[in-house]
Amino acid sequence: MRIPGSILLAAVLTHGAAMAEDGQIQRGPAPGWVVPSELMPVPDDADGLVFVRRQDALIHLDGEGQAQYLGYRMRLLHPNALQAGNISIAWNPASGPPIVHLVKVHRAGETIDVLEKASFEILRREDQLEAAKLDGILTAVLRVPDLRVGDELEVGLTTRVSDPTLGHNDAGLLFLGPSPAPGRYRLGLSWDKGLKPGIRMTPDMATAARTSDSGVDFSFDNPPMLAPPKDAPARYQWQRIVEFTDFADWAAISRHFAPLYTKAAAIPDGSVLVAEAGRIAAAHPRS
Image 1 (cartoon, one colour):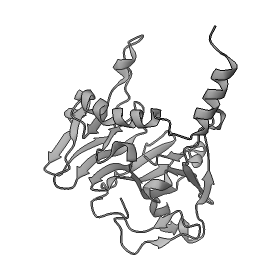
Image 2 (cartoon, helix red, strand yellow):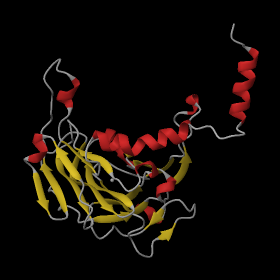
Image 3 (cartoon, one colour):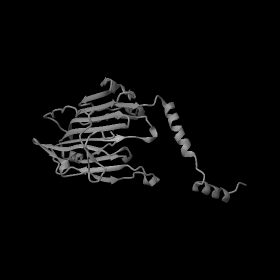
Image 4 (cartoon, one colour):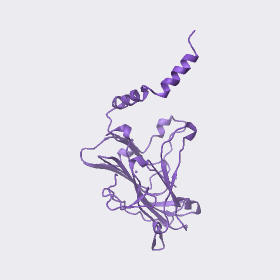
């Protein structure tokens, strides 16, 4: 089960977090702006792969960028759901390490702290090597041992997103997919004073929005499956989505990025590229 390092999810907002042995993953409590949802009771007739007792996907904007929290607890109802125990976190190390708050298994009244005996393994995956592109993204993986049908798996973690090309601007989105498993879902966006972004949402999210001076929340119990009209254009699939940005409009984005392209297009004096271009030009004189 892949856990997004970007959700869709602080420069360490926690205190006294202990570094893991590999120096890449931190342990610590959830940041203060995180308030987990109440657990939804599991119905007696629950079926399918899993029942999501809670899933919180929360984003917080501060002076350092955005912090993304993902926390969930789900009941595993079918052998095929055991793959949920393959937990993966992807992140850009330039934005800071992930903070793992907990990985627990709840079984017959017993709570098992998975991180007491297991730890994340750090990988480096370059997905675009064939294009000679290195993005530096790291991936941490953990396989929860001895996971069983009937167990409840609980995970909580926070990652940070800070894109230097955006400067002091933030942008992103929250979404609830078209076919979620039964259960309770919460999406949230909050911000420090003076950092409220522009927000736009699809009509189905607007009816569920709960707003305050410092944030907006969306809660769903057993959200229905969505199916766009048959053979409809792709824009009809844009449902249950919240967008946020500090940019006023597309022109503001263009003004921000134009200097970066201008700088990238400039070739400094003495560059080997200049010398190579000169050699090619000399080898192919104009007629």
